[in-house]
Image (cartoon, rainbow, N blue to C red; front, top):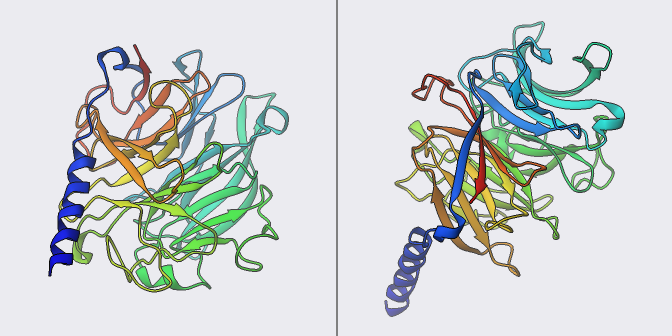
Length: 368
C-alpha cells in the first residue's frame, strides 16, 4: 500500500513538472513572421540547396517559395484521392538534389480497380521547364480516408523512411505481412536495404496507429516519431512520442498510454487521458536557445510542443513546453531551415479547422 502511494505521488509530481516548465527568458523570446499565405491545406515542407522552399498541398500540388514569394504556378500537380485525411502528404528532397534533382512524395490515390492506395514516388525536376515529373513509383500500400500516415524523410543513414498508418484497421499494425501501421525504410530507389530488421521487407518498426512525425537526434542518430492516439469508438487521447528502434513492436492496438505488455514498447511520453495533441511533424533544433530540443506540432492541440530529452537516457523526457497555443490554429509541420530559423506550416483549411483570411500559412520563427 505504501509503495503504491509513493509511486502515485511520484507520477503526479512528474506530471506537474512537465506541465509547469518556466517560460523562456525575455532575452530569448520568439518572433514570428508570415513567409507565405493563401496555401490550400499544406502538409510538408523542405528546402532546396538554392534557397527554394518546397511545400505539398493536400489537393495534389507541389508549390515553391522563391525569394520569399510563393510562385503562382505549381512545381507539379498530381492526381490524388483527397478525402478525410488523404491526399498529397509527405515530401523529402533528395540529399543530392543539387546533382540529381530528385524529390520524393507520398500520396493517396485510387487504383484501376477503384481501391484506395497510398504510394511513395520519386519525382525529378525538369530543369528546362522548372517543373516536376514522376520518375518512378517506389512502393504502394493499402490506404483509406484516414490513418494514411505519410511522413517521408531521409535519415542520417541515407535511407528513405515512410510512416504508414493502419488505414483504419488496427489489426494490420500487428500483422508483419502488411505494410500498414508501420514505419518503413527503403533505399532511395525503392529497393529493400539488406540491414533492415525483417529480411526482404521494408518494415523498420510496427504496432503503430498513425505516425506522422520523424526526427533524428543530431550526434546520436536516434529516431523519434510522433503518433496519433485513439479516438472515437477506440477511446480518447494518449497521443504518443516514441523512441524508435529497429524491429520493435510499439503495441497498437493492444497497448496504449501507460499500458505494458511483454514484447511491446510503450511511448516515452503521451498526452494523457484528457488531452489531445494530434501530433504531426517533428524536428530537432540545432541552433539558438532551443538547441538540442525536439519540436513537434499539434493539430487538434493547436500548439508547438518542445521536448527536452535526457542526454544519456533516450527514453527519458526532462521537460515538455507548450508554445503558441491556439495562436495560429492547427499546426501540421515544423522544420529547421538552413538559415537556422524554424518554419511551421498551418493546417486550418483541412476541413477540421477555422481558417482565417490568409490561411493556410508558412510561419518563420526566430529569436530576438
